[in-house]
Image 1 (tube, rainbow, N blue to C red):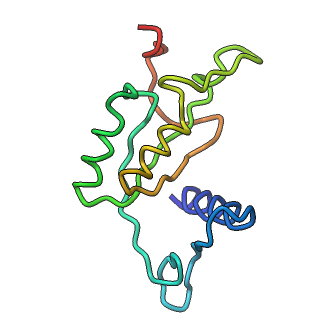
Image 2: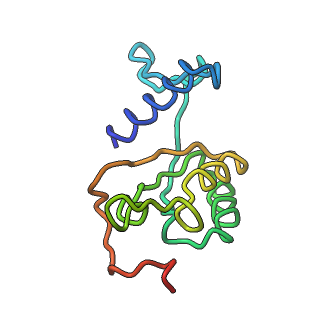
Length: 131
C-alpha cells in the first residue's frame, strides 16, 4: 500500500510540474493524515482490473464503486497484455488504460496505478481480447 501512495504522490507531483493541475497531495505528518489540496484527506479505495472487464462495462462498474462510497480505484498495469511480443505494443480496446483512467475521472474516482513487471495477480494465460 505504501508503494501505491508513493506512486500517487509522484503522479500528482508530475502533473503539478507540467502545469496540468494546480492540485497537491502530500503526507501531513503534523496532523497524521494525507493532505489533498491543502485539506486532510482519507482515500477509500477498491480494486478493478481494467484488463479483466470489457471496456463497455467500465463506466457501469466504476459508477458502482463510486456509489458504494469509494473515492479511489486501484488497478495494475498488466504489461504482458500491452506488450505481448517484444516491440509489439497494444493500447486499444481492453488495453486502453488511458480511456479507463478518463472513465474513472468522469465517475469522480481517483486512480492509483500499480505499475511494475510483477503484478501479483493470478492469470490463466488467456487474454480476454482473444475471445
